[in-house]
Length: 211
Ligand SMILES: [Zn+2]
Image 1: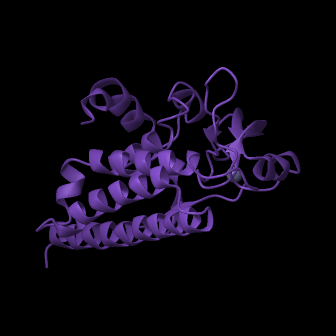
Image 2: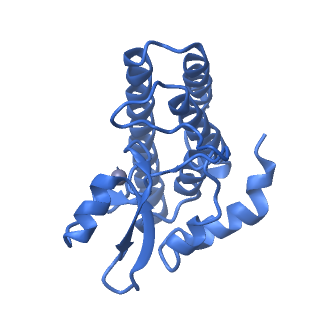
Image 3: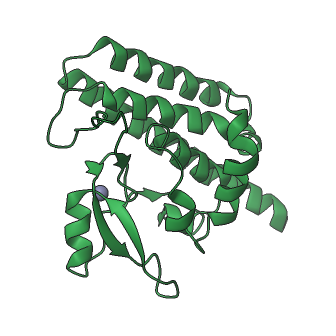
């Protein structure tokens, strides 16, 4: 097997593990919708997310999703919209405020509580700290000098946080989760991290093409 073939096999294996993570993410939201009394709007959104997921699972070649990862943004946008239909609870509270604005999801994991606390965060030892909006639990950890509870993605080097992943898939995943809250703070928060070039490119040129 040539070096490039080996790379391809590795890339495909990572992608299939990523698919499994997306399946688990959908299943977790579906379970919360059931726990929340299955509001019709939330059920409709998770059904849409499942259809989008089924399409990439049914593709003849899984790596098709690398050529056009925009369905991942549609998938997480449905999950974000499902969550705001749920009744308020300890990890919820995602409804709009009096001015109609939705709170951002926690940068460390959008499935945490709403990001309504600001904390100082250093993505890696070589990068300047920057203010980040996150859930109250992660803000408390950061204030104590501890690591936030971070969602990890499969990579060829093992599980890594979003800011150490440079694939467009991760950027679409993030943008979909920020559908309701808006994207305006993301580039500043992720400045100089691995996905920043992809983030700027997708936000500038490709995000408008979401269909
Ligand atoms: Zn959090």
